[in-house]
Image (cartoon, rainbow, N blue to C red; front, side):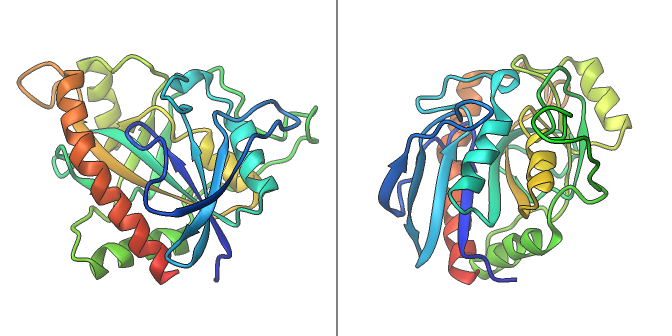
Length: 248
């Protein structure tokens, strides 16, 4: 499948694009409200790209207050035919150490109270989607292939646990997630993936592990340590995005 316009949703640590040649910025209001930020449009490695900062720019909107529906509608209205999400996460599985990049293949949703569907009987009539495989496998494999092309090690798997936030989890909660089969924990993976599926837009994620989850290290989790990993790790994420766009 050929993609004509790739949307990138940036999370913590990635609030604007630096590499692409930006050609415009769109301030949009959708039928379901305003997205988190203006949508940048440009060209990167000869590919048309859109960029939206999930938490706004500057980083200000907490995970449970993001208008995920408006974000996805805005990208659809600008012609996005694929979405690559960038997520900063905690590591649960022993392979998910700080600094590791994972391309997740499954998700478990522990969030609550979020506007999580377009098919709410008001905006659109009630309908149901199949979410057996929440991430588009074709797009996921392209990310993995691109990583191989630049000799970048990535974990080719990951069960993403989406928690409510904005607080981090307790040790008991992480133990529960681990027993449930989760490898990563973040706060924004859902309902984003489901909403993209409802709109029929292929969606995949690049997860940067920025800290061991609660109880997976000897000390407490500090924002200073997370920021240190973000500073170096997000450059590798940009490199992976650049190579993926070059190969698409």
